Image (tube, rainbow, N blue to C red; front, side):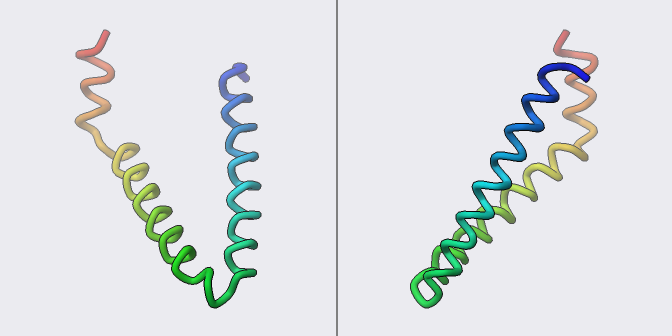
Length: 69
């Protein structure tokens, strides 16, 4: 396993832990945390949508493999 994949895995683990603590704090502020929770969920949805689009876009893969050498 390459060092960059190990570093990426550690960054992802730390990010998941941070987001989990953030979510617990937002839920703890129940009536006042609902707008923050809504904003967080919208941001997470947009992030996942962009990530899925990038991973399934064959045109970007074609240019990455054939054009950008």
